[in-house]
Length: 163
Figure 1 (tube, rainbow, N blue to C red):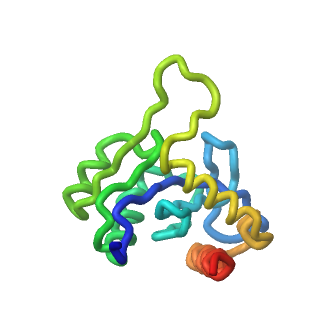
Figure 2 (cartoon, helix red, strand yellow; figure 1 turned 120 degrees about the vertical axis):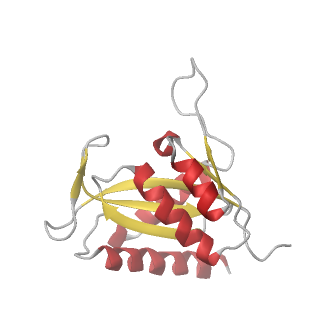
Figure 3 (cartoon, rainbow, N blue to C red; figure 1 turned 90 degrees about the horizontal axis):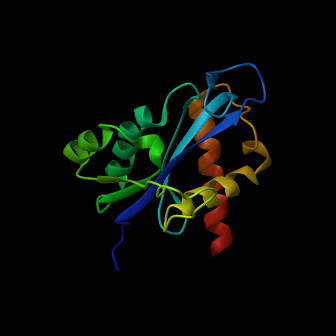
C-alpha cells in the first residue's frame, strides 16, 4: 500500500464572517460575505491541502496554489477530481507544473437536482465535518493563516477520533 494518496478531491466553501475584520470579500455566486475555504481531500475525506482566501476570488484562481501545496507534501498525488468551478485552462498549468491531472466533472444534460459523483462527494462530507466545529461554522479569524490553522486543529481532531 502506498504511503501517499494518488487521488484527491478538491472544492471550495464560502463561509460567512463572524466579525467585520480581516480579509473578507463577497462571493457573488453564493451571495456570501466572508472568506472561501479551498481544500483537497483524500478518498477518506482527510485534508491533504487547505487554503483560505477572500471570498471574492474565483475557485479556479486558487486551484494552482492548492495543487502546489498538495504536491509539496504528497508526492504520489496524480489526479484531483473537482467540480465545474475549476474549469478553464487551469488544468493545463497544473499538469505541466506539478504532474497532477485535474479532472473536472460535469453533470449530464437533462439531469436536475443533486447527483453524487464518485469520490467527489467526499470533499462535501469534509466540509460538513468542518461545519460541525463551532469555531469553523463562521470565520472569526482576522488573518487567513489563523483560519487555516483552525482547519488544521479540526483535521487533527477528526484523525484522533478515527483511532
